[in-house]
Structures are given as C-alpha cells and as structure tokens.
Image (cartoon, rainbow, N blue to C red; front, top):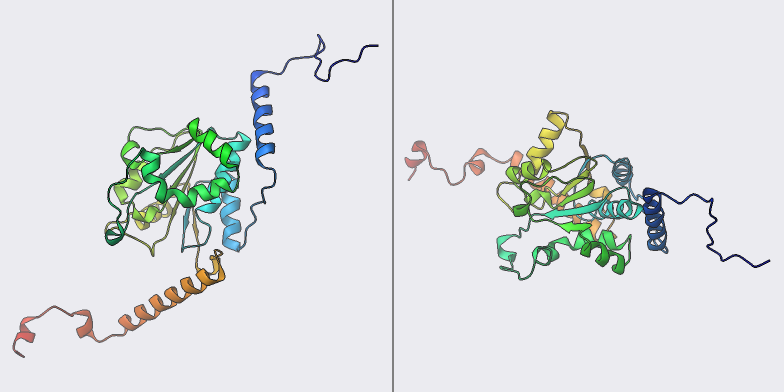
Length: 273
C-alpha cells in the first residue's frame, strides 16, 4: 500500500475555520518566540500584586522609585499578550521631557525615532519576551505603535495594551487626554516616580487622587525602597536618598519660624534696620 504524505488531508476531514487557523498560527509564533525565555517571577510582595493585577487584565497605576520593575513588568506582560493573540497591538506613550539642564534639543527622524531615547526601558521589557526579529516585524506591522501626545487627540485605542511611562512629567491636561483615549478590550498601565518630576505642573498625584476619590476602576500599586531590584547598589542609593529626604523634612518641621519666613520682611522687621 502506498504511504500517504505526512500532511495528507482526507476528503471527509473538516477544514479549520479562519479564526481557528489564526489561533493556530498565533500559538505557533508564541511557542517559537518563547523558546529560551526565562519566566517572569515576582521578587517582592508588591511586584507580585503588580504582576497578578496585570495578568488579570486590570488597569493599573505603578508608582514608585527607580529600579522596582514598574516599567519592565508591564512591557513584558504586554509582549506576551500580543504574542498569545489576546490583544491586537501594544501602544507606548511617554512625555518627552527632560530636566532643562539635560535637554538635548531637536532630535531628527520620525516620531518613534525622536522618542527612542526615552523608550529604552519599555523596549527592554519587550525584548525580554521576544526576539529582535519578531520585535522589528511587529513594529513594521504597526502592532507595536509609539504615539506622541500631540497625536493622541481623537484616537480610540481598542483591543490594545497601552503603556504610559514616566507619567510624573505629564500635567493633568495630558493625563486627561491620555486616559480618555482607552477603548474597549484594552488595558492601560501608567507608571511614574513622584520623586523624579522634571516639570512644574505634574498631574500624576492629582490623577491618583481622582482614581481613588471617584472609584475609577484602576488599581494603584505603590512601590517603595524595599522593592528596588535593579541591583544592591541602586537599592542602597535609593534608600540613602529617601532617608536623607525624610531627615531634611523632619528638620524643617522643627525649624524656628524665621527659617520658614526667610526672604520675607515685615513692617515689624523693618524697625530693626
């Protein structure tokens, strides 16, 4: 008897539907891209809460100091969801703001090229979950999209995972614009560090207040110095700066009144000159 080819289709075998074929292709890509990738494991209790919330599909604020994984974690989980086919795309936003003395001035290129220096932390998380080839392919297909704030107005971001990084440098108008773009079947993650604000009118603290005051369905995960996992060296410095800030605040709280009024001369003071 002649041996049938390995992929012979018998006449009575049902053909897969288009949706089943798409799912099979996504599963195959996910399996291939996941080879050799270490699993994402929480290293602190707050990271566990963060990861569990994101895996449940919750919208989340991740707020805290440097090195806590608040950007890396959602980037990795968004990449996995995209590869698994549970979302259609990843959208990345960031306010392109530097401290004035560090500003680089005009940057050439397209939007994603202009924003590239600010997006390295997000793309580090994406690369941890997929190959460089897969990442480039998804970007070319616009399934990983970088959007500047000036191009957000009028957009409705459907079936996506949307990440806003360094949100402490967005004012409340920026955050209102961003948070009202979120469409159906989408998840939003907003990250920021309230100790690294480079603008005078940051709106992040007010947005956190609004979320909690009006029961907006968005979890707030607050990291602290104990959650720093970048390195022991970074953790030591984060803790040192935090301790120094606390000490300075305590000194000012107990300082003589004339220190709080420095630079202000009253009529009663003028008689002393």
